[in-house]
Image 1: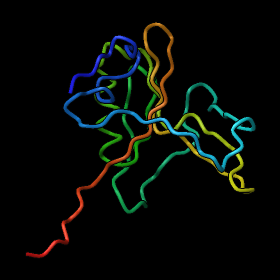
Image 2 (image 1 turned 180 degrees about the vertical axis):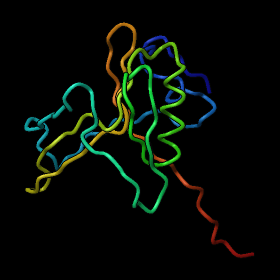
Image 3 (image 1 turned 90 degrees about the vertical axis):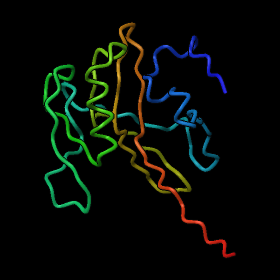
Image 4 (image 1 turned 90 degrees about the horizontal axis):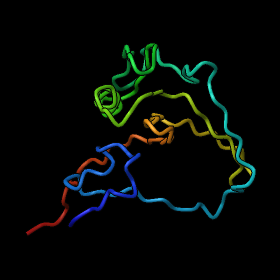
Length: 142
């Protein structure tokens, strides 16, 4: 499979890596009221949500030159992504946990905080959700 990245130069390589086997998928949630979304940004590029230990998985702080501050990370995948973005020439600024969306879904208020925000040299902003897909165990018996 060949991926032409000419139209997506603003996306970081980990997202478009043809060897990763995954291509970003954008879907519309039929149960949300998309025109009533409120976007909240942290003051001065800081984090809206921080972690100070006490979680069931790894979390911590990462000192970033591109962010000009420490970044909070939750999970090894997010830490790895932040360290990669720090040395990626296609990224001029990075922020972690700095943007939140509030919207109504099925009549209930929902809050979603993005994991990472990247800014490209041309000013293009990309929001990244970090998730790890764990391999599933086969239950077939012979």
